[in-house]
Length: 253
Image 1 (cartoon, rainbow, N blue to C red):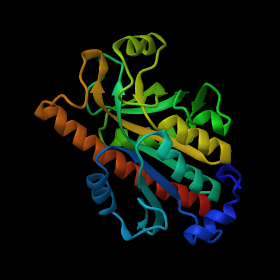
Image 2 (cartoon, one colour):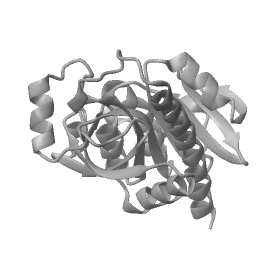
Image 3 (spheres, rainbow, N blue to C red):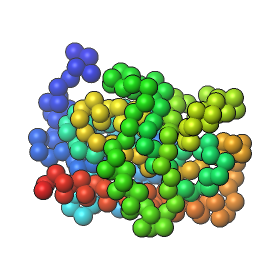
């Protein structure tokens, strides 16, 4: 049997997660720096353990069960998203960094995709159209918590693209002309999978690359920009934990 045809029973048996004990949220982070990111994120959880599949870690925050996975790119992010959405985890949260196509966007601003052009190469296998939408309620909650922490946010028409490297200046100019404001490699996949299985998804992405200015991750940041990037990354994860807590309250209430 092909994996897309598996029942949730197979995943429950493989992971040892009985019905009714699904995590409140799956937090996915797309980054090359897997080891450092995982160590930092998991340090805020208690009772951390790696599940049967590598790099999928369960833990507890304020008594709420959460799974964290560092998954870079659509082809990797789809796997934990598929498993936990099919199990009925109510909220999938994508975090990480993104490139901006907005000449005015500053490093450290947090992009909140409202709509996402699904050009990742995976989403259409989950019945996604050309565009997917994050959940309006959870986007509003993310925006609320970030703004209360003095984190600058921007709702956006967003793009998920298969590769960080396969992007030319001509492509970026075309995307900007479409009104797309930001780019990552995971969001539309996670949203498409959530939609397919009837759960919710939200994305919070911190601006790093400034494509209109020709700045990529290879270019050093000014100290002030680097500090803003670090602060926003930490705040985004803290807000993801708060959203997980809200998802658990909603489920229990």
